[in-house]
Length: 123
View (cartoon, rainbow, N blue to C red):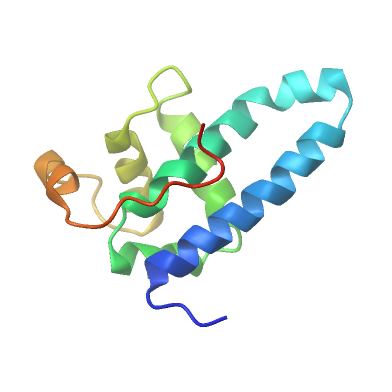
């Protein structure tokens, strides 16, 4: 499939990976589901928001990872846990994984001019 940008490709990779992850989680035993709840919720939040927060170069770097969804979700949980699912936390995770400094102008993320894409994973 042809993509117009790395961000578009990343969005598709995240959606596909989350769909597989969700099917596996739903098929697991109730006890295992409970144990994995934090991870599946982090992955859901990342998959729903990440493509709207990254730059084209971020997307290229994330696509080079074996599993961008797991990498960012794990980093997010490590830094913040689920009690603070903020856009800045996602941006920090991307910066760490992409080898950049974790500092970024918080206004830059809010003024980015990109159309908002709603994912089927959001409610």
